[in-house]
Length: 441
Image (tube, rainbow, N blue to C red; front, side, top):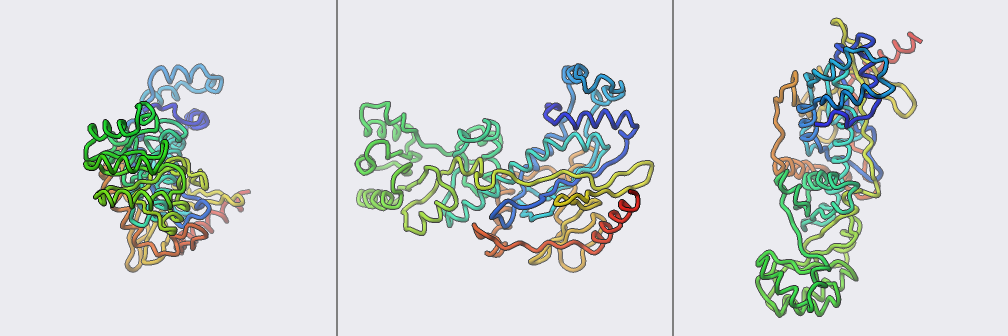
């Protein structure tokens, strides 16, 4: 794992911790959803498996250490800092909610407790992988709900901000409810179902559209999906009808999808191809999917690319990674920020989920009444104690969570705010830390 995949200040702070003799102090950081994006009633937590892989495999290579030595920022760094890098292993603890958990504003997705440089160094990667995958999984859940039981397939790698982002997006989209991905590497790496048809270039490469369909059918047999809007959609639908079985379906990528899907459905049904599916693609999102269904489009599934992998209406998840407590020489000190609009809460946290509400409390509290404690130990003293779940189990868990969430939190626009309250103990701790801070000024 490339240890330099981080912001420079994580490393300069590390050198500073060594210079100050603080490198053995144990710090607790929370990675929290500060606020939900616009028109989001919840977030689907995703990315934990990559966080675990990162922490367990984090190492500094000699060439990376030598590169740091060459930078002006480290010309006065103590030699012990470079020794620390050479011997670096994550020996701390990771606590997290299971992937697929629905989270709300102000709730932590994970907590890291480790020697301060170990915990600090992880900030950049953890924010990136948790923030991005949570954003995509949440977007996917909106699209699959809008589809009302019809399959949604993630088609977005070519529109992702990088090829590797496309691989991760395929994973997150599946967690959020998509039926699968077009990304072959996502399929192999994560065990996600993969789907694909053929491009317009396939059709154009043949002298006749019918011949392109015939060869595709010979190759894919029962899995054949024809792209039928290269030239004349109705003529292409008739060509598919004349070819007959085997065929899985056809894809519409442009035009009036409502009218075309109805006409294509009639042609296929008349040819005895009632089981042949119709897929719609072409700049779709949850709003367009909902409108197509409301207008009576005869569509069985949807392929979604750009709007899924970049989530343009909410292109970032407001996740933050903040110090909550620090322990040195047997003494624990709770920490918090009190800056306007960016205030944080002190101490390690636990989320207690009751029926219809969440209570955010201190990690050492026990719930009163029937509640589930959501944050679980994943890594303890550098050792994995809770291996990541199989991707299918994560997806199933997400679906169960979404099904239980009341309708008012699913609204695509202006959803209700889920009730999250602070426990009395956390409120008192916050008040105490704030008063002590004011007294120290």
